[in-house]
Image (cartoon, rainbow, N blue to C red):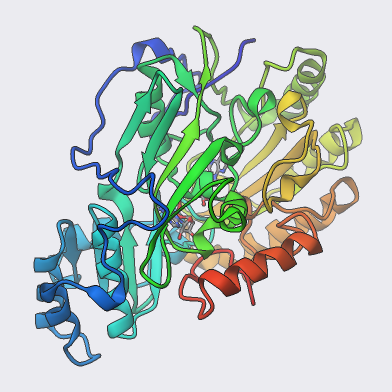
Length: 461
Ligand SMILES: Cc1cc2nc3c(=O)[nH]c(=O)nc-3n(C[C@H](O)[C@H](O)[C@H](O)COP(=O)(O)OP(=O)(O)OC[C@H]3O[C@@H](n4cnc5c(N)ncnc54)[C@H](O)[C@@H]3O)c2cc1C
């Protein structure tokens, strides 16, 4: 089996996906891609809060109460969209999140920016009107972090530009691009970097680490970042890299949503030849044999193979638990996992138990940044517990917690924040230890001392 690059569309009822990078050649869907600030540390073209344009000053000098005039003025000052509940279906669509457990949150304003300046103005507006802020990428957060009650949501869905440079083998990706957007554009040049499994997952995957196809060969997605451009709590546009604001760049490898609105990232890419592979969905009844077979095969194969069994249906209400395994998946572990899956209450039938077989070159050395993957890892398990009837919530959460407890003897304490429903702040277990947590706290103190960006796996100062 060769290296697998590509992601599937979760809406498609496929059992096996054949995907050729050579065949994908469509253009970016976002024409208005503003990369003017990508190379500068602090963009000179973008006003910070003390130098707003007159139109915005007018909009934000109104009383802190949110009047229609204020939102109208914001609308006039932006290139992108400003939506309120009065915009009906467009407002609802912009506020859709994957985990329906959090869909009842009702923001007051949703801004869909078209560039750095729009984001600066949106943050200024939120500050003037005492609105909490959330940032929504692909909307796939297990905890619905892209949506908040009563605040301002910055929905990045108009900023989906991806520009690949085949000469330098790099790509500039805007903050609202989905994995599908990125895949398509990289495929034009037979280039890739490892991403997750689903086409509609967004930037949060890269900013939180990013595990997925081809990771056994190339490591996690965030390892490929060469710069990150964000609008900070102060309304500055900052581009960080290994050479500029290195502390911030380090922190962006796993905890980026804590520090600002990421408007674009630059990543390095790998060559990829033709390959044949994809994702196989199999009935749960065969889980036991399949897990054992794949586990044996993966570790006997070259570094190029990336396999993982998956079973289940697209979820509705979700509670997610995960852990790294202490080593290779043993027979005992597979047996226990199988029993847990078979014993799921019928109301939780759409649930998925995933065994992600890692190891290989990509996981041999510690990942850069404050990621839970700071140590070499061979495999992780993820339990995505799903239900459709709201009244099954407690049952779902209790079952997820039981899985975590039962699998504790096979697991390390380390948790991947991107695949975790535990409320609360970033823990040492999520960020690879106490030392990383302390360093993260000092970066947070510097860039967001008032914790403006807190609808995420938050770093407590
Ligand atoms: C169906 C499904 C499949 C998945 N598959 C994988 C997988 O294969 N591998 C893997 O590693 N993970 C996977 N995940 C987990 C996924 O990586 C996380 O849920 C991730 O946070 C989703 O990012 P998002 O942009 O889609 O979600 P969102 O809910 O929009 O955002 C998640 C977090 O990132 C922040 N964020 C998003 N965009 C920006 C931005 N531009 N600037 C600042 N902050 C931003 C949000 O504020 C929020 O805190 C999957 C999740 C789902 C639901």
